[in-house]
Image (cartoon, rainbow, N blue to C red):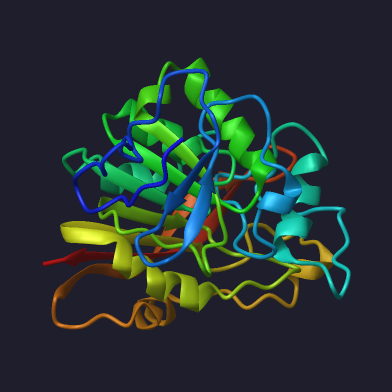
Amino acid sequence: MPIGRCPPRAPARGLRRLDQPDPLPVRQRILSGGRGVRWTARMHTGSAVPASAAPASGVPASGVPASGVPASGVPAPAAASARDWWEARYSERDGIWSGRVNAVLASVADTLRPGRALDLGCGEGGDVVWLAGQGWDATGIDLSVTALERGSRAAVASGLEERTAFVAADLARWTTAALFDLVTASFLQSWPVAIPREAVLRRATDFVAPGGHLLVTAHAAPPHGDLPEELRAYRFPTPAEDLAALGLDATWEVLAAELRPRTASTPEGEPHEVVDSVVLVRRR
């Protein structure tokens, strides 16, 4: 498989666009990120990337938690990396998220013309598959190979393999020359293992095309009252803090930086009210 550079909007010589993966079966690809960084893309295949090929640290999975909160019985040893912790978390059982699209993302994407989308910390790919179903060419990035394999299978099961791609990478280091019409980071939060969240959000602005949007959605408060021990000390971000983390200049327009309430479910299935932090910006 050739090694090539993926420039904005156009396929590199000898290499298909990221948002147009090969039909099944697909081989592992080593691609140039355009800035001297290579990363591994595993798209629509049943075998996982070897653990030695995945980065040592990175960001957690996103998605609507099936239980309402990303709690876990997996302990966090002092030396554990985020990748190791989240791999163990996903290995606990098949499917830790509901597979449903995040409500904020759905409300925003419904107002936009479908194009190229990038989901940072995509987890099991629920948002990626939903975006593809709405006509977007969607790429999901996550550090957990186990989660990405589930997203790939979900895309294939939905007949959306031609519109989706999944990449195992560390968002603190991953880069690409490709630009996207929508970049989204939904609930990009990790406990008890910390991640460089503000740095990842600032880097996310590099991937937005002119006229494109960046959406950051976060838990602004505990998802429910029955909290695991590791969550009690977690500091939830505010819209103002996430907006400041982006480090925007005059080439950006702020469309929203606000708290939004919504109704979610407890682990027992009971409805309860939660609050999301929502930041939506557009590159001019």
